[in-house]
Image (cartoon, rainbow, N blue to C red; front, side, top):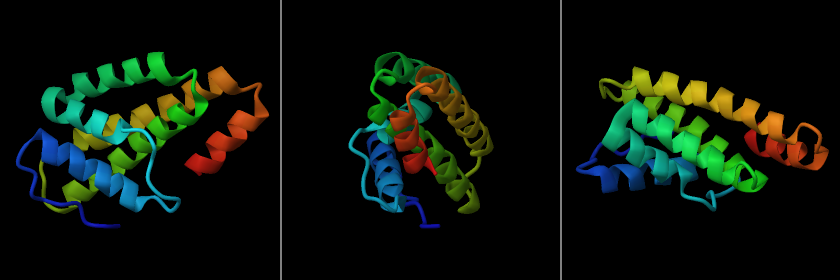
Length: 131
C-alpha cells in the first residue's frame, strides 16, 4: 500500500493529497469525478456528520448516473483504506473514519443494487469497476 503524504497543512492540501492517493492507487487510472476530495473536505471540516451529509447529497444528485455513482463508491472504499494507511503512519482518530467509510461503502453498494438490480449492463459495469 502506498504511503499517504503526512504533510497536510490545511483542508486544501488534505483534499488534494487524498484525491491523489486514491487516483494513484487505482489500477485503471484516475477517477473522472472529484468525489474523493469532496469526501475528504467533509471529513476534515465537519467530521462524521459532514461525511454523512456528503453521502446523502451524492446519492440524491448522482445515483441516477450509474458511472458517476460507481466512482463515488470507489472513492468511499478507497478513503476507508486511506484512513487505515494514515492510522498505520501514526495518525490518531482514524478508526472512526475507517468504520464510517466502510459502512458507507456497503450502504452505497446496496443503494446501487436497489436502483439498478434489473439492469444487467449497469450492474456488470459497477461490479467490474468495484471488484
